[in-house]
Image 1 (cartoon, rainbow, N blue to C red):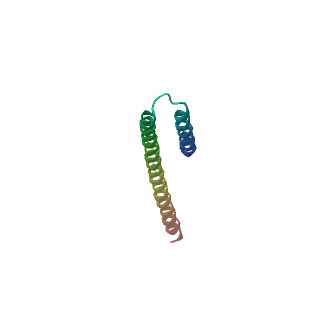
Image 2 (image 1 turned 135 degrees about the vertical axis):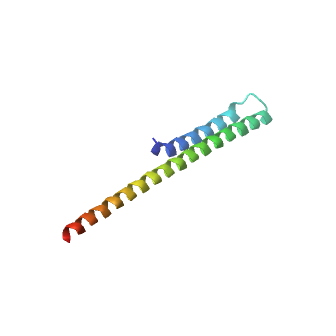
Image 3 (image 1 turned 90 degrees about the horizontal axis):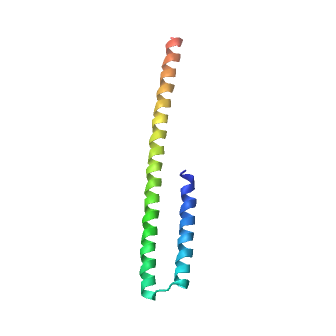
Length: 90
């Protein structure tokens, strides 16, 4: 699911750009109203991208913590195995 986030953001930005261009070409309102609408939609896009970025960072932290736990567990098992082997060698 997270691997698709980067692709989704790219498509979102492409869609936003195309939509903004179409809005300028076909806008029935004044230039001022159109600029205001584009500004609002751009802000919405920034917020959406920021939220996706925070989600990706949180997911990365989660993976890091899980990896760290696995390494700690594996290290403990290796140490336990060494102790068992040393106990048999004595």
